Every structure is written in C-alpha cells, then in structure tokens.
Image (cartoon, rainbow, N blue to C red; front, top):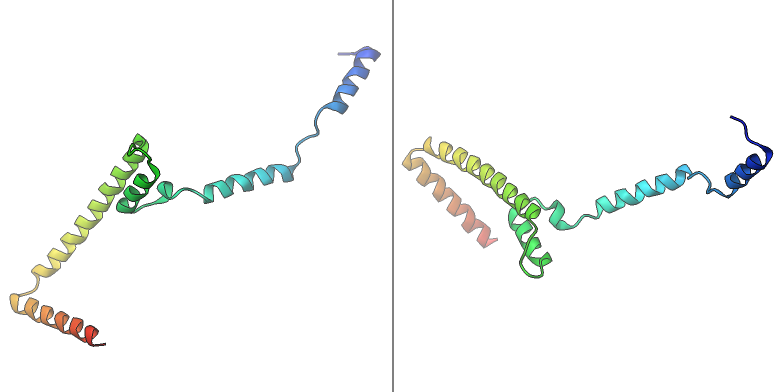
Length: 121
C-alpha cells in the first residue's frame, strides 16, 4: 500500500499529535492504587464473626434495609459458625461421658478452687 506525499505528511503530523504510549510506571501506579483500595475494605466486607457483621450492617444501613448479597453472606457465616460450635459441643460432651460422677465432682471442685485463688490475687 502506497501513499501520496500529501497523505504521508498528514499521517506523520497525526502521529506527532497522538498521545504518547502509556509508560510502565504509570500502569504500575494504577496497580498500586487498586491494591490500596483492596486493602482499605469496609469492615462489612471482611468481617467473619456473624454477630459483629450484623452490628456493622446495622450501623451502615440508614433505614434498616440490607442488600441481599450481604444478607446471604451473613447467613453463610452464621451457618458456618453454628457448624463449628456444634462440632465443639459434641467433642466436649463425648469427653465428659468418659468421666464418672465422682471424677466430675472432683474436677468441678478443683475448678472452683482455682477460681477462688484467682479472686484472692
């Protein structure tokens, strides 16, 4: 493809007036800014305790309405929290079944003594 001298000159002029190529440091600055935005997330976005998330949602919401995606997140956290606590409760109840009533009473008495010792200090 060939251009006449007038078209060629016009293309060169346009090439001089076009913006320069974006430098790599500028693109790095944009990445750094995006990372900074990610690091400064709102507590509603990063909270993992369902009770604290609920408090944050109520503080953020002016009229008590919460977006559905945040409610879903709260429900998932509550479900996970309940699963973890139920597993812990089962482990505790299984261990307590191994003790006789006398052993349980003895442990309870020792625990009570430790509490009293802490109160004295």
